[in-house]
Each structure stands twice: as C-alpha cells, then as structure tokens.
Amino acid sequence: MSLNNDEVLKIFSDTEALLNGHFLLTSGRHSNIYFQCAKVLQHPKYTKLICSNLAEYFCNHKIETVIAPAMGGLIVGYEVARQLNARFIFTEREVKIMQLRRGFSISENERVLICEDVVTTGGSVFEVIEIAKKANAEIVGIGFIVDRSNGKVKFGYDQKSVLALDAVSYEAESCEICRTDKPLVKPGSRKV
Image 1 (cartoon, one colour):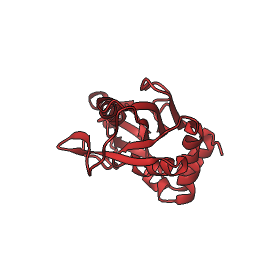
Image 2 (cartoon, one colour; image 1 turned 135 degrees about the vertical axis):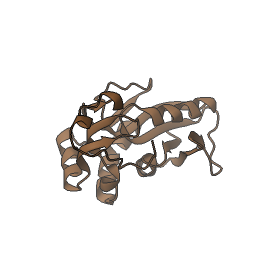
Image 3 (cartoon, rainbow, N blue to C red; image 1 turned 90 degrees about the horizontal axis):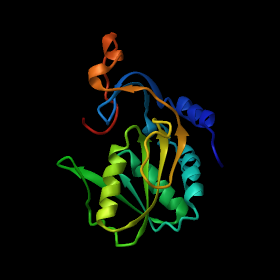
Image 4 (spheres, rainbow, N blue to C red; image 1 turned 60 degrees about the vertical axis):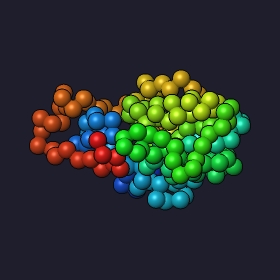
C-alpha cells in the first residue's frame, strides 16, 4: 500500500515520533523538527506498512542483499530485506569509521540495496556506498523513510523515500534557534 506524505506524517504524529524543539542532528546541523523513527518502528504494523513502500518500489531490482547503517537503518533494512526475501547485513562505526563487522561481507557484483531511516545530508548512506563500491558490489538503489532534504540530496543511484519534505536545518554557527531560550537536545543514537 502506497502512503502519501500526510499519511506518513499522521503515523509519526500518532506515535509521538515527530518532535518540535531545538535538536542537534547526526549531521551536526541544528533543526526545530526531529523525526524519531524508533518511536514509529517500535510498532510492527507501522514498520511493515512503511517499509512495504520501499519493498514494492524495489521489488523488480533483483536485490540479493539489503545493507543498512547501524543504528537508525537496522529495522528499516531488516524489514525491507524480509519483504524482498533478501539477505540483510549492516555496517557500524568502530573508532568513528563506518565498516562491515561481525563477519559480514559483500561479494563482487552482488546486487545490494542500501536502506536508512532518515536522510538530512546523507552522510551515513554515502559511507555505506563507499563500502559497497570497495567490494565491487552493484548498488541498485537507496531506500529510506524520511528525506529531510525534499530530494536535494542525490546519491547517484535510484532512490526512494516514503516521506519527503524540506525540513529546515542550520549550520551550528548560524542557527536561529540558538538565539532563543530553547535548549539544544540530541535525541538520536550517534554521538556527534
């Protein structure tokens, strides 16, 4: 079932996953809005529904493996892989470097789909792309739940988001929210 932006925003609102305030994003940027995907993904019915949009879009791409960056992309990647009947692996940071661990590997010419929860600048996805390129895998696409850039971030591969909007963010030095009395909060999993 294909969801439109309003339907996805309602799910985020219903699960209290759409936060307003003053947030430090994983990218280092500041924003007045934060998508706490974990609050949505704690509900299997929403996870299945949202990820089906990605699985349906990529169903004819002959994907062998779905790969996602930990932490945010884990549940998304796993559920998309489950729906596509593909293998699932993930990358994680060790000494601030994104890498495959736990015995995971990608073979040459293996058809991979990269999945993530939220994209602002695409930093983690670009790191996973480099890992797949070094393995000489065939990257067939990038799928993610929330595109905060509203399509401005381009990965150079077929890409699909479930929700796309232009969520304002600021460089830390020029953050307009910092001029208010709202405290800066870092709700995500990665230390910046």
